[in-house]
Length: 371
Image (cartoon, rainbow, N blue to C red; front, side):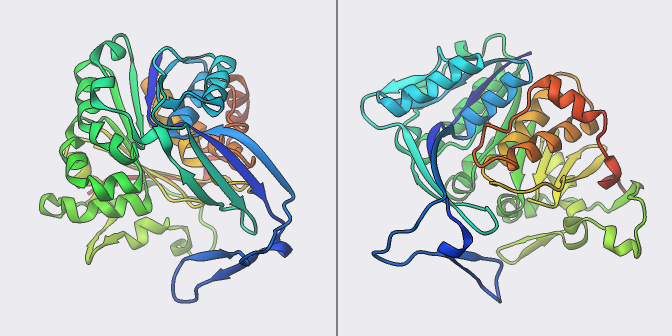
C-alpha cells in the first residue's frame, strides 16, 4: 500500500521533571490540572532530550514501520531542525521528495515539560508549519496513492484543508483526516463542508464535542444495543463505556453517542474514530459502534498516542484489515508509544505488532448496533 501524510513536523525538546521539583495543582470544580513554575527559579530536570515529532511526521514513521510505502508533504525551514526531520525520514524509509523547504520561516519546534502524571505541557513555535499554501499541493502528488492522510494544519495552513481534501478524493485514494482543535474552532465551516469527502475521520472527545453545534440541524436518532458484551465484572453498569453512558455536549447542545454516530455517518463519513484518552476508542460505521478499551501501561508520555492509534488504524483498514483487527493493532501501537517519553520511539514494526496481537486480550472490547 502507498500512502502520503500531510501536516506538521517539529523538533521536540522534552524535559522530564521529578515530581518533587515542580508543583501540580488540580481544580476541584473542573477537570483541569496545572504545573506551577516559580518565577526566576531554575528547575532541575532529570533529562532534556531532542526528538522529531509532529502529526504528519509521526504518522509517516508509524506507517513506514508497518511496511507501507510512505511519502510526506510537510513544510520545514532551511535549518538544522529541518534537516533533523529529513534525516529521520531517510532512516525510516519515508520518501522526502515532497518535503517543502522555505527560507521564510524556521522549522517548527516544541518544548514539552513532563512531570507527575506524564501528560506534558507543550510550548509550541509552529514556524513553517503555518505556511503551507494550497498552490503547493497538487493532484500529481496523489497519483497512485491508496491513502491520503491529513493531520492538523495550523495557522494559515488550515486554509488549504478543503483544497487538499478535494484533490485527495478526486485521486481515488481513501481520505483520512485527523484535524486539531484549533482547526475545528477557527475554520469550522470549511471543515464541515469537507465532511462528505472524508472517508475516515478521527477526533478526540473534546474535538468531537466541537462538532455537536454544527451537526444538530442534521441530527438523527439511534440507540446503541450491545451485541458483544464485556465479560460481567460485578454490576453490569460498571461495564458501560463512559461516552455510551454520558454522551457528548458542547455549547449547550447534547447528543447521545448513538445519535452522534448515526448523524456523522449520515453526513458522509464512512468510519469515525473517537478517541477518549486512557479509556479507549469508539469506532463508528453504518453497521454500528465498536468500543476498544485502552491497554494499561506505565505512562512515560501521552504525546503522540493519538497519532499512533489513528495512523495504525487507518493504514491497516485501507490495507484490508477488519475494523476489529485494525482497532486492536492501533491500541497496541498507541500503548507502546505511551510507554516512551517521545512520539516516535515506541512505534512498533509490523513483525513486533503481529507478535503482540497473538496474545491480545479483547475482553475490553464491545460491539454495538444501531436500533
